Length: 98
Image (cartoon, rainbow, N blue to C red; front, top):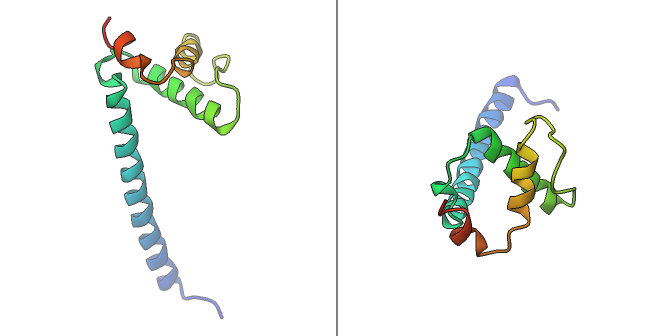
């Protein structure tokens, strides 16, 4: 038997709330880690930082770490490549104090 549209809308609304809560938890977790690594002190354009995060995500998903520009254009790939190769703990002393 098919569900009435009102029940489907209620279910969609409930799932959207769950998605929003999950995204908030994930953002807070990533934010805490980024701050611990010293990223809060680095002056970098948001697009470059996003490109670096995308390269890092590719690395951990099994893809190649540094792309050749992708959507972000020149310069963004080199940021991701250098960020991905920094050993854990080394980012705090190096990049934060420029």
